[in-house]
Image 1 (cartoon, rainbow, N blue to C red):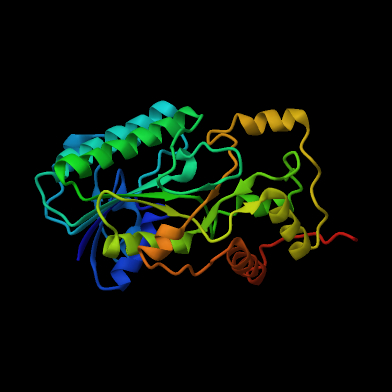
Image 2: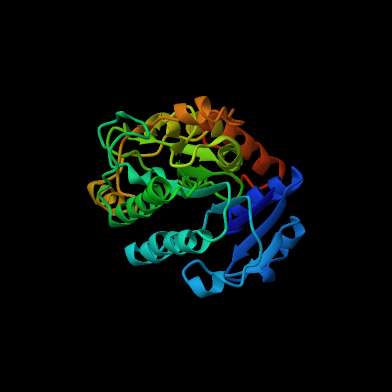
Length: 306
């Protein structure tokens, strides 16, 4: 297959490398893609273009079987989100209409779910986030799903949970630095997924996903924050962190994703796409990352007397 990946970053680069390994011809698109040695080293053919600049897409020559949009907003606000996700996807739909392709994958976020009562959330449940960025993500999804329904555009939406993996272990480093805090009673659930399994889920969707469908990409066990911190405490031999102060809780509530509490279901990922997770829960994933850091001499934990 000829695959075109927009955004060769934390997900797009290993995705492209894996597709190359499987024998596919892969092209990677970014604003400065041709200048990244890592893209070339992965066997990906680099193309300079920007989905927020539709004229730049016209320079891309060739037809593709698979197209994946995993471009990042670079952690901007609502306007940056709208420019990258809403306008960017609209530009891609318009550009690709003239070039038939089999699948288009868009990596959205479980941040579109605003549920805060700890309930199990499935793909058909309401997407009513409280944050402005979350609302923009819903708009981006809806544009693609309408195009799939009305224009037969082969879009598939993947709602991806909090990604962790090599070089992205915020919770772990926060805990080691004694910066973690238990939020209230620690009952808020964390929904996570390892980088490796995000790549695997995208490939499963390219091969088996149904256009017009939405799939949650999350591991098997949403975990209450206090239980996650307790596992880190026992694994690393450090005391449990203190409870957050009212001032700290206020800062948490102002985060971009907002403070939600839900258990996102991956049943459709497992049953319809037939994907088997390499890291079914955070325990396997974090254990692998902790061992990797330890082997590299980068864990840097001062053990505490218990």
